[in-house]
Length: 223
Image (cartoon, rainbow, N blue to C red):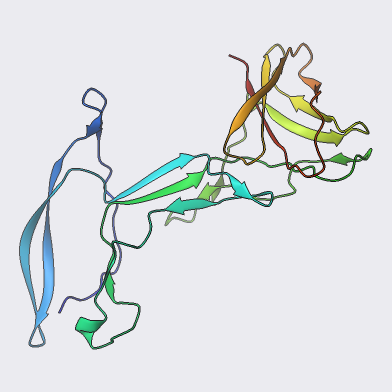
């Protein structure tokens, strides 16, 4: 019998840009197990050629206007040892077999406009979600994206009476901006570019939004 663990420690694997693959490594560790109520151990080695758990960030799309938070590898390869432990039909204990891929959605602040044309202004933050990190210290959590005066952003949205969308953009003065749009948060298309002589400006998407559509926008520095 093998006991549980108090915690796990992640070890980062190095990536070889020339070979376009991870550098393999050999891990040596103590394996503890119990035989006849006596704790015993042995030293074992394991060759690792790819990460057991791979974290990534990418665009994951969304549903009903709400961004998907994350995706992970399915459970089809997991091993259920319930029968071996005399718990037939139970969900575990078991083993999660690697590799496991966990992808976080590369989202920032979100703005959603889906209603009949009005003269109201919709401000960012209708879906109040952002990533962050924290550790085992007493330091406060850090939210992402960190404040950056150089980052272009959408600060307001107006749905015009003729169905067009007007975005108010903010970025450092003189930085040209490109606007992208999407119907599903996954597939993005080019909507246009604007100059930025003042640091804050309006962009109007001349393609009217249909009432059955959900449309999403993001802004970046023009190439």
